Image (cartoon, rainbow, N blue to C red; front, side):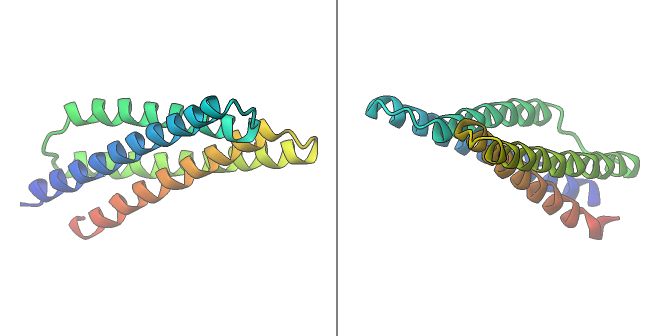
Length: 144
């Protein structure tokens, strides 16, 4: 029975990732389009929009690829999934830290608004991915 439950949890996780990715693409694209429509050169918003849309595209492609490989898992498969999620969470925190470093460095040496916008977008994406991964880890906990 727990293999079915795990499959449902994993499918819901991928759905949330797909939703986040689509929303990121839509947000980044709409911000970029608004800047083009107003003929504005707001570097911070432009770079935030670009990073947001690109990260969204990567997430959609990655989640779609994972969706194709969904299958019931045995105990070893569940442990592999949990280990991968913890590794990804570490990377997610690292992304947020790199974004923070980029934004703070750009502020200190500038201010370079484009780099601040890009760094802020990376922070947002890293935190969102960490929250989504930790949510699945927490949901799997009782199955172990």
